[in-house]
Amino acid sequence: METLTAIPSWLKYTFLAVIMLVAPGEVQQAAMPAPQEPSAAHTLTGQLLVAAPEIGDPRFAHTVILIVRHDETGAFGIVINHPVEERSFASLLDAIGDDSKGIEGSVRIFSGGPVQPEIGFVVHSADYHREDTVDVDGKVAMTSSSEILRDLAHKQGPKQSLVAFGYAGWAPGQLEAELERRDWFTISEDPKLVFDEDREKVWDLAMARRTMDL
Image (cartoon, rainbow, N blue to C red; front, side, top):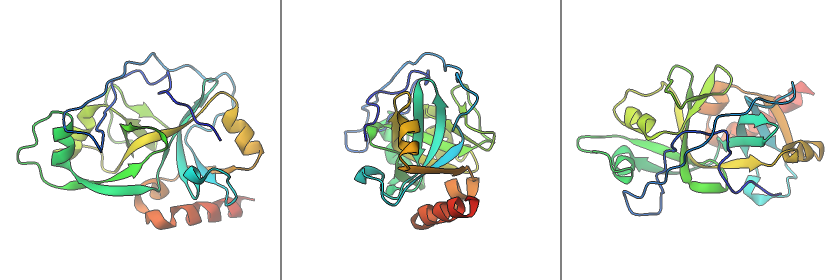
């Protein structure tokens, strides 16, 4: 299974980049063109992609992925059930060169996928919106600018959020081929699965929902 090696062209704003294994202050930026409209009526945007038990790629074993965008340019998603560590907000603000004085609290960091793990994304509830926010389905959204990290640190961010580094990406037609091969199943997005449920149970719960839908 191959994945895209570059940030999708439809993401047009500066990305929050807090590289977990580099010195504070190293910030990567990317300017991207506007999104393209899907060429077909059927899109998996807003669906949850559930790895089949027999998936051949160990990087995606037992993963559940929120599909943020799916159109003629390919697909882009964030893994929602692979937490990797807890980081203080102060250390994250330091990494983007922001003032961390007086900042308390920490946030769980997720591995969002194998592509460009130095790039950070925040999947969050739809109550929060900035110019660069990508609305996924009216219930969840994604923001990747540094401002959302500052807002979270100052308790002015969305009610629910998931901070992830890296993403999963597919070239045009690639995800469709993997679905036809039954590497993946899809279920409707549910904010409870995205934000609330025990991460160790998310894949099992998603698989159970997929079975109920058959």
